[in-house]
Length: 415
Image (cartoon, rainbow, N blue to C red):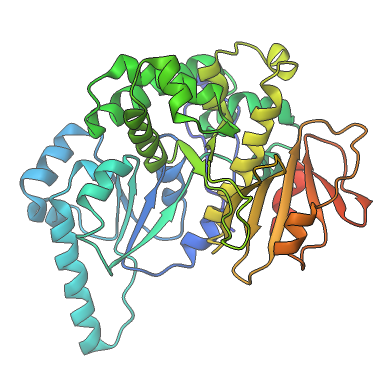
């Protein structure tokens, strides 16, 4: 697997710790031979760096450069005559006129392949951080010609593989933003404050056409306070003076940009005891911690929010694993009207059901048994997995296995 996150700023200017962070998605990308590879995900999660370190001699162009963006929008054919494929186009959502021209070039290559019988190679690698604009401008243009991949921030597994000394509390506090692990001179709180202001409160808000920016920022903080909890739109509306229908629309936008996720409950028509209310999770704990207002790790670790924040970290590890390894799995919460709950239910492509619970403590954990109502629907599931903050992998009982979150990836890869 290739090494794909390399810090290359000048040491005399930034005094950075040099580090290499290997991303799990790189293997999937390197083996794909679609003519167009489109990598989506939030800003600053490492997309362009990942693509830049894949095999192949791709010229790199970023549309954060306003002059290049102007040329691509005004004359896309002239742009691609000057910058011929193979090419890496960063933040391609800012140049939508390019897509029809890219479609033309790909179709031209396909026709040529019918004549010379040569396999078509990867012509374009592209990144997009604004999913709203991408959905609006790209997917229809490149239907059948592009492979789509999704990258979020670093997983616990990726961080611990590169930096074994990094403790889980630090990962939970600052999240998985690669820059914070490459440059130890950055202040996590300031970095994430800037990210929230520049990307979420500006880029996302403007592209989604949100008019009430102050109200949106307030609701965003209320979402963060409820990460790991049932998503009650009426309650948030009561605390924000924003209509529930608007809050639901904003939640959809944030989920579309892969910043939050509304985890649906498992539904089975044979069991009417199951509830229908989803749970809200941030896909990166660093954002949730920052929006909750924590300035230091210590108070956060002993706060009432710690359990929900750790549960969010476990969710993010599972969610990103599914993305990074292209798993055709379904992820749910299991909850009955009587209050029985399992944090995470994975239904694999083979139909197996995996039950996991997040347990922030790793000391004196008692074994848990699966409920009768769960066993009735999933009789083949023999045990529940407790994902803990630390500790070791332990078989607590015949029905209960305990796994530290640092080992969760290696457990999931065996399923």
